Image 1 (tube, rainbow, N blue to C red):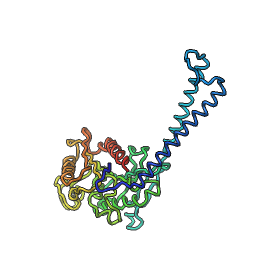
Image 2: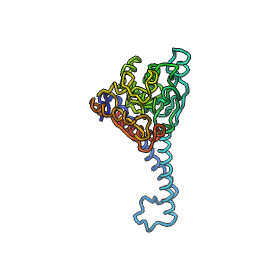
Image 3: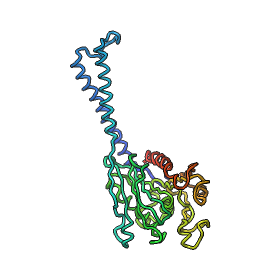
Length: 336
């Protein structure tokens, strides 16, 4: 099943992945068979009458029973250790990698990413992660919940208000995602497996660059190439910091060109919206996201989901939201 309406499955790449999986299965099966044969050989030397040919288990001596138990334990431990070793994944972190090479000093200082990736995997999925902070604070970090799960994480710093405009914030987010598309294959990842997510202001940036296609078009990237958008408690209306810059109160909602709601469309990437408890969230955040979800459905989008995390406020909802993120990422990766 293809989860993104406008996307396609690359049949050549899928066949290559399938073939690789079969080769891995054959290799591990060969290892298992070899271990059993070698074990039988050594036990045959130690025990002249191979235990495999005993027809009456009650006739076995204590020594023979001990040999059989030792053999079974030996094979189990040996095979388990080898197969578990195949699953061991080591990770590398590269810090402060610039995704812009030109601009003013402040922009060059902020426009950097940390990339966390598995060094011994191929075609892995990647989550581009935007931190929160009301577009005026915060700094990049690798979420602990995304570590050691076979994914790469690109943690993004972007310029902050009031040292820049909201347009600059969104443009930096688009530039970082474009950098990921153009660079991730050098690290071993797949361009077809890039997800975008963030908390609060980071969720807002996720929504903006994923729904309003013009931001990524500047960098020759189609927003519909994103595997999924997964905003955590992000604005669907115009961001409150932007409204404040216009002299509006944070309690006064608006929907204009800086509101993700303005760009609802049927052909967007899968959209997984996660919000905290409606009675504990800030400034009606759940309700605006519920309206966002409904209008995406009305527009004809088939892959929009909405989750409300009961008992969690705006800040604490991020930790359990990662469980939802990883579940959706896993399902989508199974199709790519």
